[in-house]
Length: 350
Ligand code: KG4
Ligand code: ZN
Image (cartoon, rainbow, N blue to C red; front, top):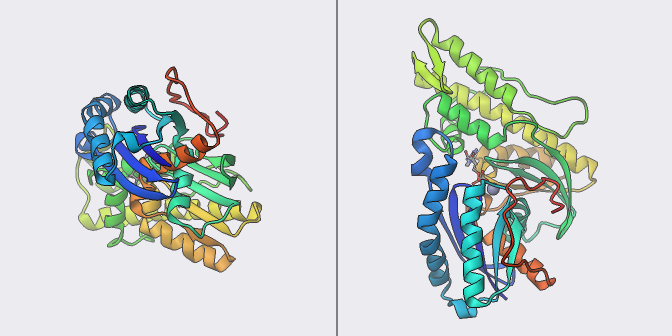
């Protein structure tokens, strides 16, 4: 079965063609980074406008790269939520239009379910049950995945997502956008023990996360280092400056604090679920330090850590098509009256 996947939940316009839920024939992503860079974060209005310009060409490109025509497709899967409402509407409207015009079945997909599917698509050795850490600009959630459509939320962030914290810290230091790759790059040359930032454990046994205190600690530290005349305004340094060396040390110490907590709680979740399989997914799972620490800690505990390639960690439509394949096969379809679910519950229960 050939399924077209469409994903526009945040700031990437993506379309992909996947055969039988496994073989990726094309996976096209049009990034909007240059649109949002000057604001240091995603501007929802600009995101939906850019999706409208890109969605048609991106779908055409996904079909042509896959070497298939509309008439070869057997279904369309589209991200229905969670995400930015204006962004979601562009993808869902495009999917409905195409489904109606071509007489194809349509199915709406939960974006988070897509992220687990990405791990399964790219890591064939990954076996259920496993613990999945979905860590991106919008989410930091831990799940027990027992099988297709059988998930349990174990923990989630109570405030900022980990990727959001990376983006805010990079913005604070005027280091660039998106923050994750920029911080990772700076951290390589920095000393993570130069500053000790707090790790929020949230009480014994909690699998929830909190990153806003860490972000505030970084702001305080930066303010102190800037000295007299130094100022932080609108979330970034507006007076005074830090040395490049200092920026690298802050990046390394911040990244270490995030990675420590992510790895610690993920391993605790695996222990509690009595599974030796862990998958990392979402944009932050591209982070080399996170991957290395999780693998190392996993090795010490007898836990295998899997992560998809960077293209499948970040938002993409192949993961949406893969979930869609499973749902369409089990007879699931949505009508042309399907609406977006911007704040879809993290419990994934619809
Ligand atoms: O999954 P994704 O592409 O989109 C969302 O659903 O949010 O994730 C984007 C997030 C951004 O916050 C970005 O800064 C972060 O993932 N990210 C990283 C890295 N690459 C992307 N964070 C840390 N290290 C990276 N190498
Ligand atoms: Zn995502």
